[in-house]
Length: 123
Image: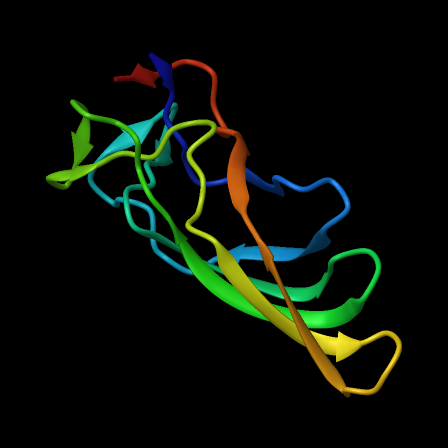
């Protein structure tokens, strides 16, 4: 059992040298709530802006999805997201810090590091 991710949850990079702004672009459920906040469900779309891998690339952008690991609990007939659920690998494209070439890429993964509530858990 893990806490269900809700509006206001925190997403973080798996690699601590990576940084950037992670934005959730999928809506939370308007019908299913945990601690009075809409519940997020699979496939959660995320966009990363102003990303960097800390050494070779800056001002990078990318997008991906976080996939639910829940096997029993659903919201709107879709499995809910929980703390520690993570994205598929996201390819980031940005400015090379030491050109040439002018652009470079790296891959990153983001995960739900804080569910945004500590009352409701799910399997």
